[in-house]
Image (cartoon, rainbow over all chains, first blue to last red; front, top):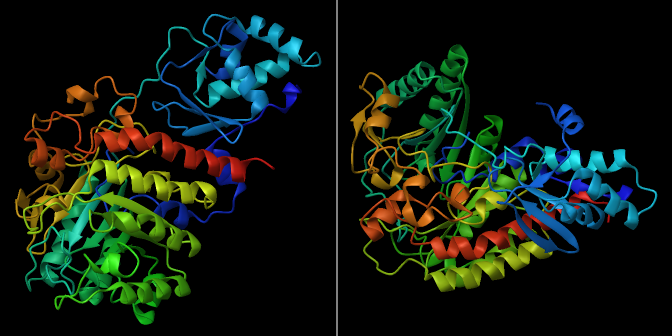
Length: 39
Length: 463
């Protein structure tokens, strides 16, 4: 096993990698529902 | 202490006991529900190292085992990978900090439902609004937006989202645009960020209106509950006729004009069977969507609209399977399971009494759109945020998920928070218990995590 190939991926990496416009990312929030208390 | 300094001092590494793990397509999904980092995906080499952490081995011991597997690996390589685990909040160096602590922070984002009109061109079977011909006057609208911004400023909110609702907010579109214009002007002066979302049934989304929405940079959420007869079983005109083809036309107009929008789906016993097909339909059109479960309310005559929990699980699993097969690049995770939100760990399912306010068409205030009939004050009150806090109907006051006994030991408590408090109260007679949908949430959270994992794998690794 080549352990140097170890790699981890998170949503932060994906957001950088894929050219997503901010609007599209935003609207997947549940706009038709009440806000959560999270910031 | 910064991770770099910590690693120089630390001899050991630990994994959080809350971590949820699962294998997805040969990758290891690791999710710490107390972290803000979301799902972390490890390839097989990283997974091998992660599995070596057993809260007893030292870093040196981990290195020695790894070296047997890969004689070329250096100590610094191992350190770098472990640092990545710690940065991703799935592991930690300091033995005393065995739990990620998050505290309740004063919210800085205020959500306001701006109930522009009681009028609606539809008579959806599950609607929580008692329709009349009343609408918000120009004076009330102006005063409302002014007072909202003033009060938000006074209470240190940094951002406001105004959600135009009703009734059907597009019935009073020119007034809506006036409020947007005034709101932007006042918010700029107050140095508060403001944005606007139109909640609509989609019928009036003509090309002309769509273009204006685009020009004003407003966001839209369109309600659609199924394809053809499944939508038409619950979203109907006052003459009883179905609305599907009109909503479809509205959606097409939004897409053609490049408006940012999503589709909001209310799942009831009448459309549950169509949710997998609707999912396929929306994915094909590249339209983001959110699933909401029906919540009973006093204005609904029809009984048994709640989807049975077993049925909800069965058909949502089918829908999830479709998304899993080919996930879109954007994340759907926060809209796939009703009130479950993976964005950040939180204490309350909704912002009722905290950062969430409803302004009715007559200038009266309400705590929640589902309790419109229960006024807690009016826009004439001195401080609307104060009224919002005092008007919170949840009992005991300041109840969080920590006060919901059945939730105490649940690993998901900070992402579901016991569900909608009002629904729980209406069905169970008290707020201090878990949601009637608890079994659905528990059964489906791992499935939703797998969808997000598949997305990260598909777009994050060069397969």
